[in-house]
Length: 428
Image (cartoon, rainbow, N blue to C red):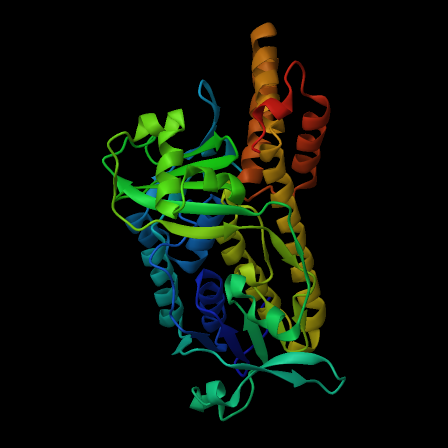
């Protein structure tokens, strides 16, 4: 049951999908929401391949038809772990757990859609380069505050700080940097190059995202309405072997990987090559008196299974509930619970990604195929479908932290692999 929040004022720093989703959900309930952003975003943004859990968020926001109109229907994901073998995951295995499909989207129009949805809900957008300063509570705790020049851009607030300030600044992590907060950083430090291409062979079935193992990393192929998004994620030092520029490295890695080269020998690049750093981070702190973090500003994991945008928007959904179902006096406990959920989700996603990087999931698939050939029949089929439903539900965002699903995967990767060495399929 929601608590009346008509007099509540919330300031959100950042207008990406996390900030805009939160702004929309709060504004719909009558909260006075202002979200601040300088509008500076690159033309090309990673995170074009979505997962089924997000479909439930789109339905809550009332925008699924709009997402479908600008996006591409996505029935599943295929992982190619060598030139002759692949693991194909159909989202139909999630029936009863999640929607049995997702979408691939061009990020700029998608992000614009979320932004417009927040405005239609009544949120106030303040375009500016946000200025922050350190304030201090009565207990001596350092907290972020909007500087006077930024606060003055919302005359309706009459110079008063909002009741709650939210960091939705993404990987810039403005509050954490302002307050000097620490974080735990993951082991992989890769570089990612990607671009959009035409004159290419689109994956089958239509809309299927394809992940291909490379010598020292992996690549993606994401079918969009107007193009095929092709990207590589590789070790920084290894990338230098393919050229001195991002363009040279991306093109050379496509040409030198057989599944990629065969899919797009006559490709034509129709966008600049965009580069991102691939690393993993979880903040040690994510809230204090009068402030809280959402989306990437709190944490993010490796993008192999496309958890980024899902975590951004579902964390906004969870934070909105924590704000709306509690009075300000109860926020400390509510935000602690919210961040416990967030931290556990990130850890579960990373654990799942690590099983793919280690090659265990592919060795397990080979073992399952061997068992099906040796012991064909109904029992073998039921066991295979049961495992596929659980792994699909985890990768789709519905069973990611489910104890049974996680323990089943842990048990199978530890005791269920026979005759195959995971390291033979590992992503180095």
